Image (cartoon, rainbow, N blue to C red; front, side, top):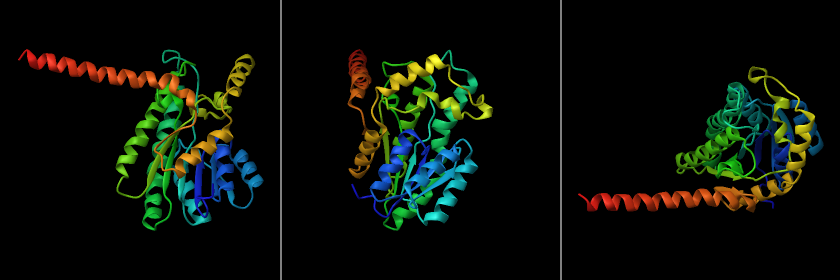
Length: 283
């Protein structure tokens, strides 16, 4: 997989989990990588281990000024940007009724507003790359939660934000259809990461950093450990990008519940056909 040769990729939330695996896979595929993360020390440690084609940057995607500074610094350091991975994300468990307002704001600001800011800051740069006949691709990290409501959970506010990420990707694809910039959303299932422990980096205005109760952490860690390796997830994502796919699904288990949503849509369309036909016949 060497079609990323001589390209520059930016990854938000790039210091751990899927972001870390994306950084490693991209480097192995010939790209230079800007690893952006709210935790600069982790990003720096990873970049140092990967060599001169990787650099670390501080970026809290809830702060638009930091996203703008990231773009400015990456352009200064690498001279161009070809692939942007809007990967930063957080998650919490719980129903809608049990979700605290501050935590709802946190999920919206990271998972939705953060992607929105990343789009608005980086897409103009990608348009210039496309105009120069360079690779230009914007990739959003969605989730199985983008495609339906998984049987595990509930993690209702997180599911809401990942539904929104699909809408952002689909409308962005339409908006950029004449620019040469490609858009993808990749949707992993359960992946063996520490996403369940996202509160460890929660900003003060949303409640601050919080240690997870040991008993819950052990259960969550065991459940996530049954998921797909982030290295496999990253490799499948890059394969989908190279194949020009908009929707990149990396876990076939998603079919188990997403097919229910598809069936409901088809049934609702059949129902309205019948209702309208009956209404017309009575006129």
